Length: 166
Image 1 (spheres, rainbow, N blue to C red):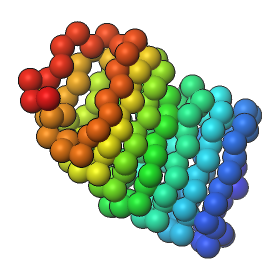
Image 2 (image 1 turned 180 degrees about the horizontal axis):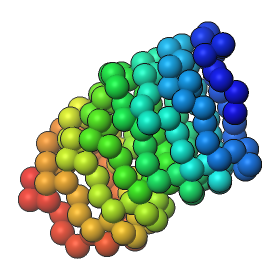
Image 3 (image 1 turned 90 degrees about the vertical axis):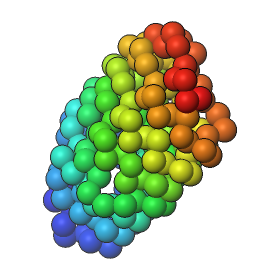
Image 4 (image 1 turned 45 degrees about the vertical axis):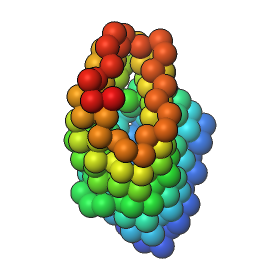
C-alpha cells in the first residue's frame, strides 16, 4: 500500500475486493479531503491505522473485512459519516466522534462481544443493526438515551434482556 501523504486531495478511495490487502498505510488517516473509503470484501485486511482524522469522510464501507478486529480511535468529530458497516470485534469508545452517523451496520460481526456505552451520544443514529453478532450478550444500559433510534436489529445474538432504559 502506498504512502498517501503525497495525495492530500484524494476524495475517493475504492479498494473493493482487494483480497490480497492485509494492511493500510498509516498515512490514510490524515487524508483531510477523503469523502469515500470503500474496503468492501477485503477479506484479508487485518489492520487500519491506529487513529484517523478524516473529518470529511461520508461513506466508510468495511463489510466483508472478516479479519479486521479493531477500529481505529477517532481523533476528531466526523459529523458527516453516513454508514459504518464492518466485521469488527469491538468499537472504540471514540465512536461518539461520529455525531452525524445515521446507520451503524455491524450485522454478522461474529467476533463482536460488546458495544461501547458512548454509543448513546450518537443523537442522529436512526438504525443500529447487530443481527448475527452471535457473541454479543448485552446492549449498553444507556442505549435508551438514543432518542433518534428508530430501528434496532438484534436477531441471532446472545442478547437475553433489553436494557431497562429502552
